[in-house]
Amino acid sequence: MTAPTQELGHGRTEGPAPAVRLDAVSKVYGRGPTSLLALDQVSLTAAQGEFVCLLGASGCGKSTMLNLVAGLDRPTAGTIETGGRQIAMMFQEPALFPWLTVTGNVELALRSLDRRKRRERAAELLDVVHLGGFAKKRPHELSGGMRQRVSLARALAQEADVLLMDEPFGALDAMTRDLLHDELERIWRERNLTILFVTHNVREAVRLGDRVVLLSSRPGTVIEDYTVDLERPRRTESAEVAKLAGEITVRLKEEVSRHGR
Ligand SMILES: Nc1ncnc2c1ncn2[C@@H]1O[C@H](COP(=O)(O)OP(=O)(O)OP(=O)(O)O)[C@@H](O)[C@H]1O
Image (cartoon, rainbow, N blue to C red; front, side, top):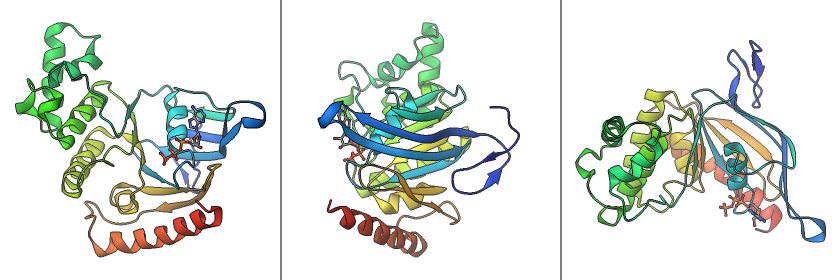
């Protein structure tokens, strides 16, 4: 993409081309009478370095959207452009190999490097996620939050420009989640990552996002695109976050009740 300016999905015209662009993307699972329309003409962009949170009722197609952007599946219609950027994905379950140490799990994503470089790079990344002292532990010796940090280090090891996160902190307690929000925000800034972050937690979306994009109930389509103009770092429990989260929750509830799910 070489055009000097691009019309962004949320109505602004800005300089650089978006890092991720979905244009009228639809996804149908299956064929014939039992086929299911999961996404219906979703258009969405994320600028380089932008943090975009995706919210929507259960089953509205959020994971489907991330899978399509990651190239794990193909859209039935529409186009997705990521400009050849390196993409990494992180899930609610950290999916670590239990028989490998923390270092071993991170090194898996560094197989292109020789042994010494791999070890050095894994150590650097474990420092980035504040797990420097835990390199030799195995996953079962870590807390849930620590396991997610390993998963984050592994995603960073892929030198990703775009990080796709599917409810990564959904299973964690509120305090651990708060800490990981701070760390993710720091890493996002330092590395100028573009992040698409799926969550069910409206406050989490407002705490983290430059934008919060609301999807309709299935079939998913974009119904609102909020710009979060609150100064960073934000606090999940602050009045400003609560106020915008309240407005978004009202809109989300309207959408869910309209569809009865
Ligand atoms: N591989 C698949 N084959 C058939 N149907 C699928 C497949 N993957 C997802 N679906 C269906 O597509 C719809 C969207 O699913 P998806 O997991 O993307 O939603 P979601 O918004 O991420 O849900 P949740 O918030 O509950 O995680 C659901 O009805 C789901 O059952």
